[in-house]
Length: 149
Image (cartoon, rainbow, N blue to C red; front, side, top):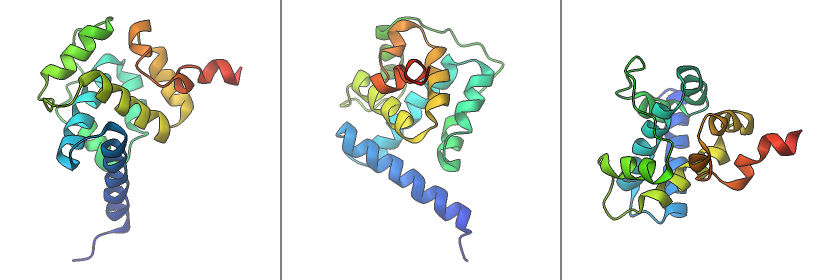
């Protein structure tokens, strides 16, 4: 059976993202990288408005997009924390690899998104977050709109 090019491309792109996360986050392996990516994406998604969550999802490689939408119930209201420590703690509680420092992992996933997604879209995502959560993004992503003005 031949793998369609679009499937092969998204698998390759996902592998690149996971490898980048392993290298930048000093993670043990692909399984740990995938677990970190999944948990952080889900918490970020649940923190955004429906429209912004969908807009961000459109920026992701197809396979990562499936992970991002996995188990999502858009009509279910999830309490949105405004505090960085609470957000970090909530991420750590969700089947997160124990040896991985959660704030660092969040920063690494946010940096990965800022590196691979449209800067304007990332700026829109950051714009929906309270100040303490904005600080978890790379400075260049936080200041994109101001630099473009």
